[in-house]
Amino acid sequence: MLSRVNTVAFNGLDILNVELQVQISTGMPAFTIVGLPDKAVAESRERIRAAFSSLGLKLPGKRITVNLAPADLLKEGSHYDLPLALGLLVGMGVIAPEKISPYLVLGELGLDGSLVNINGVLPASVAAKKQNMGIICPQKQGSEAVWAGVKNILAAHSLFELINYFQGNTDIPFPIAKKREISQNFLDMKDVKGQETAKRAFEIAAAGAHNLIMSGPPGAGKSMMAARLPFLLPPMTTVEALETSMIHSIAGELKEGAISFQRPFRAPHHSASTPALVGGGRKAKPGEISLAHNGVLFLDELPEFARSTLEALRQPLENGTVAISRVNSHTIFPARFQLVAAMNPCRCGNLGFSALECSRAPKCGEEYRAKISGPLLDRIDIQIDVLAVSPFDLVDAKTGESSEIIRKRVMMARDIQKKRFADLGHPELLTNSQLKGELLEQVAQLDNEAQKLLLTYADKNHMSARAYHRTLRMARTIADLQNENKLLKIHVAEALSLRWKMSDLNRR
Image 1 (cartoon, rainbow, N blue to C red):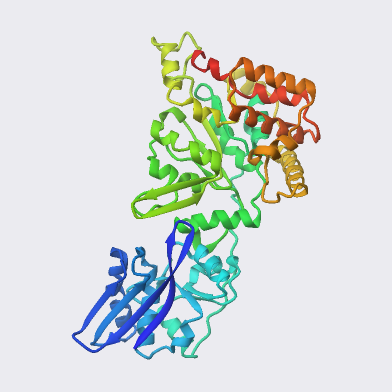
Image 2 (image 1 turned 180 degrees about the vertical axis):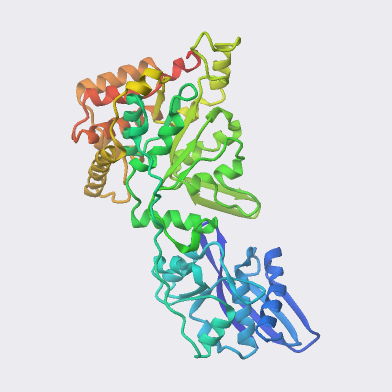
């Protein structure tokens, strides 16, 4: 008898349909899996034997052949355990085949027959929804299928529970959509003493989702301000939350199927490898830039990262995606993140303080900054100096604005942008950082004085076309924060003041 079970294979966020075929025939007892299974799939035979034994079942003493079609597609992961077990049960006559056919099935089996959590239930559920199918998955991950909109969900604790359900002896409750609570560790911008210019830069960065880099001595508050940026940002929309959660589901970081609407904040250590940052590895898993999709990626001690690792950020910063190519696969992950970076002026961090700087100053500072290429800096909108905070500021400085107050202005500016894009027929755009081409020219028209200022600065400082357009986007955000329709000279002047002079970079 030939039984068939629908399951899936993963290629990034792309879901590929796989038909698992089980044939139980006469011949010498054997259990063979074909169709390019990896080690985890091949080992499922032993997990299934143990799970069946714990339930009092025994595999038939016949020749069992399992085919994973299409046979030329590599099958990776332990989520084929459950479809394989159900295919065997159909072949053994324990479950009727028509009861399995309406479902996509995925789950790992424990030796006691329990269903173990796996990666990728959310994107698989989205695929099931598109195909008007139900889904069978581990109980704790049923919430992911609910968020995907699947109507027929069997989220079971164990294989035994599924057998009883299909034989009509029990019922499996419909799972409840879970929402992860917003972090209670609220970090307030008013805790930052002084640094008014930097805080203004963070407000503009939050309002328009602009990339930002800070240069300043150790202890100036760079990391402190970066950690507070997520609390200036609005929560994700439902679409954004699902996009981000699908990536986290593939990476195995979606805890118990709970979806979070808080924007992710990722801060990898500077020893991170290129695959860890941009994605890759043997199975092409998403990297930190994809896990930060729709959120913030903070790179502290930027020059300490490997040069090749930093250069790999250039394409994702432009396109919002990262392409990972392997000999037998080509995987694309979303990577639309807001980059925030921090660096010291030199390796010792004391450049500019004559009593503290090392004997190699200022050459050490030039060499340190040279680790960051011009093309990468060109992609960072806001580039500011963060000065050391004096002890008097720590004691006497007045309490600044709270994150809640700044966030209200950020939300107002983002609402203006969202409405503008919707009126122009581009509802998919949410922030000014996404503006390109004719649309940028349309929404960022300058008056004569503003145009003259920008052209003069661009010509004098050899500003690239990319930097020119990024300055326009930033000026548009500054105007939105002031609820101004027109871009004036004051908006352009502030935008230019928040960028380093690229030609002077190596002399700083």
